[in-house]
Image (cartoon, rainbow, N blue to C red; front, side):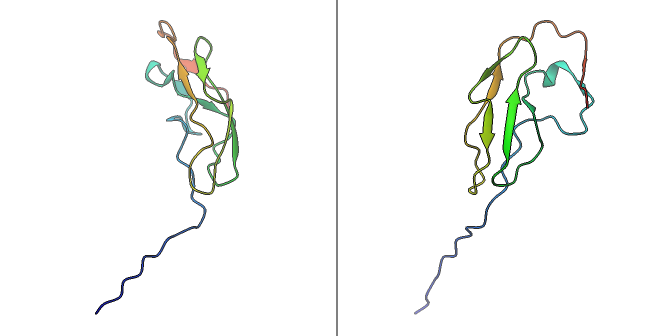
Length: 94
């Protein structure tokens, strides 16, 4: 008779990205206007990230989240609202 063992991996997990923007994003186009702006790209457990939205949008959820060892963020912030007519591309300050 075979014996089976289930192995659980309890090592800390990296959290998913909070935004589609990357540290290489130079221009925010209309399709990216509702993405969160982040204070850091860190996603390792214990990382604390402050978030905000472009002017004209409202932040829903906490303005700061922490990455847990489970690989989950402490909250799920997002930007909501109509950014208006975005005929002009926004240049991101690096």
